[in-house]
Each structure stands twice: as C-alpha cells, then as structure tokens.
Image 1 (cartoon, rainbow, N blue to C red):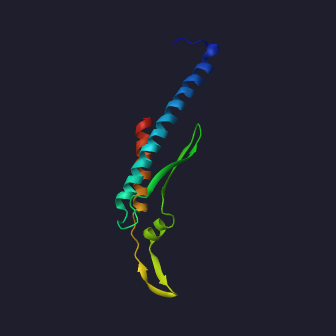
Image 2: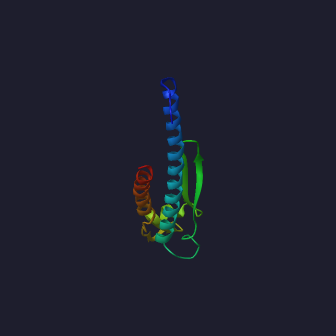
Image 3: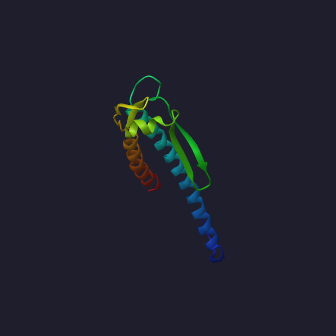
Length: 126
C-alpha cells in the first residue's frame, strides 16, 4: 500500500481501527468460551441431590458495547449457591438442628476461569 506523507496519519489510524475491531471480536469470543467452561465446571463440582441444583447453572450476557462484554454465570436456585458454598446453620422452630457443611465448588471454578481467561486472551492477541 502506497501512502503519501499527507495521508500517513489517516493510514495509521485506519490500521489501528481495524486491529481494534479484530482484537475486540477475538476477546469477546474468548470471554464467551471461558464463561461457558466455567459454568460447566461449576455444574460438575456442584453437590448432587434432589431439586436439580447441579443442572440449575446458566449464563447470561448482561452487558455488550463496542468495547466491553459481561457474561453472568448464575444458578436458577437463588440463595442456594451461597449456602452450599459457605455452609449454614440449620434451624427449625427456634432450635439449632445442626450445620450444613460448606461444599465449595464455585470459588475454584471462578479462579480457574480467571486464569484461563487471561491466558487465552494473551494467546489470542499474540
């Protein structure tokens, strides 16, 4: 591509704009892929039992702009993830019946996803 001195600034701007569009699309693709893997990891580590908690996990795109994307991973059983992740006291009729031990499964998947996201973005942009 031949560029005159007068058109150099415009040519550089066009090249940088194209790189920005391509890299943004690549990063969004990585975010989607890692979010879905994180959801699968949470489901795989979730305690099994009646009520379908293990299969209640889903992802939802909660923000999308030209330069940003946010995906939320959530359980369709509100409140239960916190109780299972951190444990809880079981009370009935004002009496403490015992404790529900913590069964950590969300934090590990989140940490792994954060690490994988950073690695995959670096790999995609290099």
